[in-house]
Length: 184
Image (cartoon, rainbow, N blue to C red; front, side):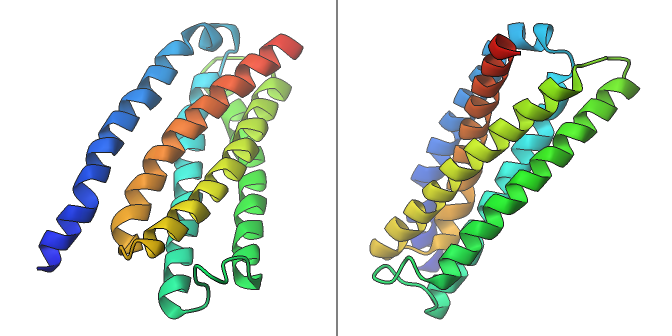
C-alpha cells in the first residue's frame, strides 16, 4: 500500500521533471552567444545550479520536517521558524553566489580564459539572489499545497524543487548575463 501511494504521488511529478530538464537544457543551448561574449560564464553553470538545488531542497526538507513536527502548519505558515528559514536561505544564497563568482573567475584563469571578474561575479550574484527569492517562494507554495492535499512532502518537494530550481536558475543566469552584457 505504501509503495502504491508513493508511486501515485511521485510518478506524474517525475515525468514532469523530465520535461523540465529539457527546458533547462534548451535554455543552456540558447546561451551559446553569451558564452562566446562572456568568457568563463560556462564555468558558473554547474556550480550555481548545484547551489540553488541544494539550498532550495534543504529548505523544502526543513519545512517539511517542521510541518510533520507541528512547528508550522497551513493555518500558521508565516511564523518565526518559517521566517528564520527563509532568511537563512536567502543569506546563504547571497554569500555562496559571491564565492561561486570568485571561484569561477579563478577557475577560468587556471583554464587559460581571462574573464572580466566584475561581470562574472555580478552575473552570479544577480542570478543567485533572484533565483533564491523565486525558489524560496516556490518552496513555501509547494509545501503548503502538498500538506493541504494530504501528500507526503518527502515524495514531492525534492524532485519538484530540483527541477524547478534548474529551470529558474538557468533562466536567471541567462537573464542576468544578458542584462550585464548590455549594461557593462
